[in-house]
Image (cartoon, rainbow, N blue to C red; front, side, top):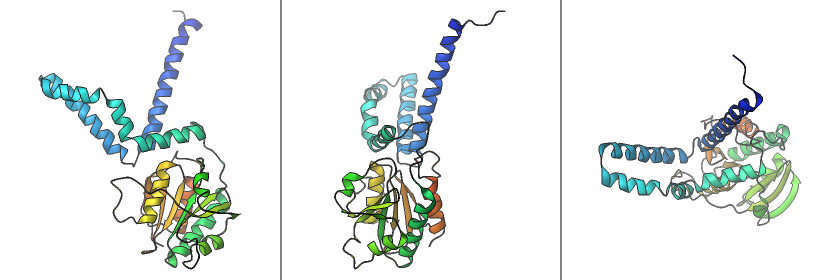
Length: 266
């Protein structure tokens, strides 16, 4: 039996590449939705599809007609339901390669300074919100605050959030190894399922992660607890070590983000 010629082999190669691309896109989509409110919504849509096929097989004409009309507009429904997730995914595709992580952030010293500052702020019960820019630019929020463009240090971060300072109420935005601006105003999250225990700082942190790929550290003024927000997920009750580890792990994008964990309180 003779082997396949080159011309006969090409269709199989194209088929394999096609399947691999679709598999990878589905994998990245599921990875992006993991741990978010999109998961139960996706399961709900799957249940509707199952009910439709059951209604057809049992001859439930009216029910099948209603669901069929609903599913005919499924693209619009998906866009409306998953608009935050779609916007975040498209933003990442525009600024970050699909197959390779960006190594732009120097995590070694940068995240240690942030983690130590957060631990000190936590101990002093000084409410604070620190935004770490990744691939999506945050210049629109920088322009609304007070531009500092200062070298990142734990002492600077601590001094900004002391209650007597005029910038303590806003957010600090960090770009690379520079404290780019302070006193920045962030958009509040519109998520209806947000934890009711979250205050304004937490809602603002969640809001900016819904619109960008930034990492946001929040120190609660009431409890002193440290929370990290990444891609709409929250990592609560962190200490300096666990905070630094999470920042370093996620410094170059969303691939490999661990599931939210409860770490020891500071």
